Image (cartoon, rainbow, N blue to C red):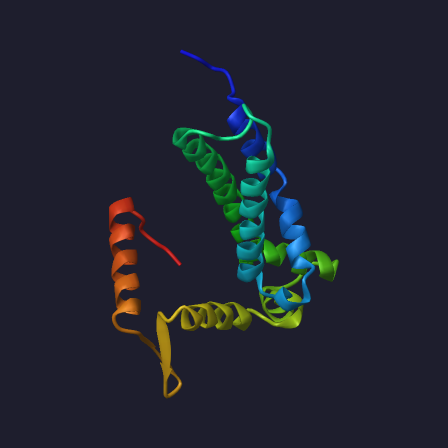
Length: 176
């Protein structure tokens, strides 16, 4: 069994460590300000571009040549991007963790009602619901009908059924 680290994998592994820098650069673009998902997508595309161009510029013996080398390199970069996506999702949609910031800004103990009012810089807890509904509308999973929400057909219904199946298969009792 060989435990060496192939040279063709070293560059994708190292370049994957620089993703936070790509994300930092992309978040400074005015056109993407306050658009977290678009920022992450743009940074991921930038990262893949830098990886591919860099791989092609490496000297022989250090860049992927055979299809299996490229497949392994894609897996390394993909796994790194999935890791960063999980961390990013926790930080950008970590509603529970955001309450810690609300408490820190207050610099004193707060009641549940005060936390709800001051949450997300004063946007309140209603912001969470508006934000989630906005995301569902933007992806075409729900639509508004006379002030009420309705699943779109077939996309919203398909997503709800897939979610129900996943909950049953994974044995999750309570979600949401």
